[in-house]
Length: 191
Image (cartoon, rainbow, N blue to C red; front, side, top):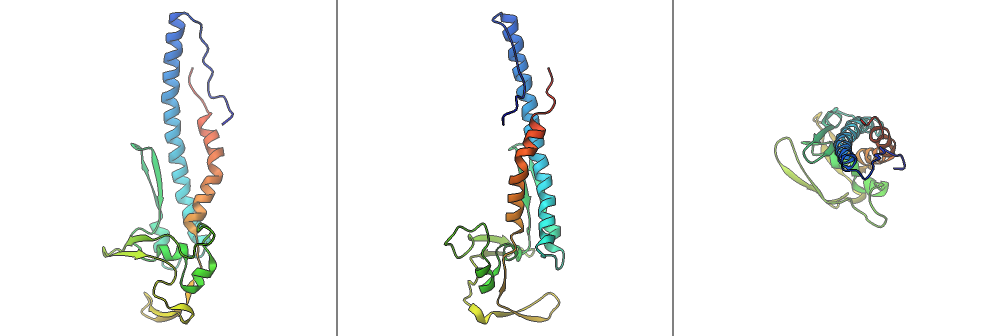
């Protein structure tokens, strides 16, 4: 960041140095508060971006995924989290895709040459833990598979393309973070 946040001038007299030290300590406190404000702001914006992304990638069927998007601020550790899909078994499949269709749609966050997303686990609302290991872990191939949907009807699929709503959220947050940091970290310090 190229902006000057605060200038503290002092002479070599003891009282001037003490005043400069006190001013520096006050600045540090204010700067720490502003860093927390920045994290809170980006976390809140990240939640809204993720919700917008769920809608824009067309992953709104029952609104379960959309309503699962939330953010959380850990002030003690100074971390913000944007989460989606907690308790939903299908959230990783939306993000990375499934089957041969998903494998050919290529999630932008997977490095060149990799054919499957990272292994991840998730827990359903019933408390069952599952591990998502890739696009076609059951080996269905182009023949696809039939599944029973929530409407109790059976459907055939060869998978679905990746709809990287969380990856897109991360990229959008990365793009706005520098300007947001400049806006928040450089405003109004006391004298």
